[in-house]
Length: 336
Image (tube, rainbow, N blue to C red; front, side):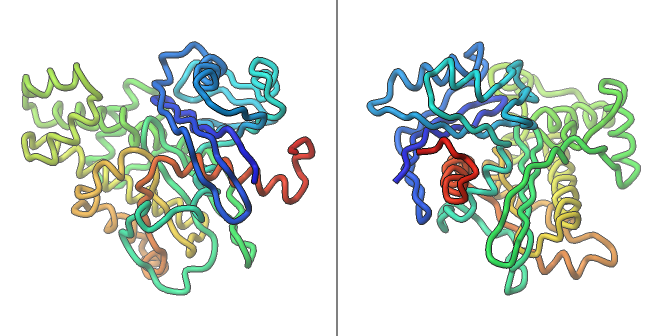
């Protein structure tokens, strides 16, 4: 059994844990959550965690919200430059693996229990083939899972930064609004926590209604996207409800786009912080209608299972499982 320090490094929070990993199972211990921006670097954050650990780890696998190349990553929504070799040196670790966080989620899917996932659409058996993962949270992550006939091979993408494509007059107006601030508009500009806030501001400007004082106050003292989502769920604000409806419709459309591009008959997995926190709204929204609405491909779309990942620990499971796989195929020679 291999003991591995595992982490999920995000723009808002970072989760660290110790994984006891074998080819058959991954068990997590000492899982802790940190606010990422409370630390000047990932090394400082991990050092804080290691100082409190009752055990020693010499190998780390860290899932990072951003592109990873040659063991390096500049995080998309944090001012951190990560370098696996520098982290090894700074923390005295024997080996550090950096991987994209959505790729890690893909690796972690086999370790999810029934309580860790919610089926939105069952699809049609046998549900074999490629799969994909999409996750709206601080940003918008996407990954694919290639099916070789026996098992899945997760791979990272930066598809969340592809160009946003409006589908009707309202969405064209939204795109024009976003262009004024951002110039180029990616899907992440729309499908993220900050994207929900932008959608709400756009709709308020369109309707001409004033933002309620209570919503202004709540948005000041907490995550404004969470305040909008809660107000929509409680029926306290029509603009918030419309914003959530539009957000979830667009989420379903882009999930469908990714599913088409990867031919995801093996499953479409919805991860990230927004979906599990708004599961009732997701079920009641036009998410699935937008997912299925692919013209001549609609019948194909309905064959694909659509599943929400409820646990935030999926990237931790996946990071550990990736280490086990690397050790098994001897692609990581320094793993003991």
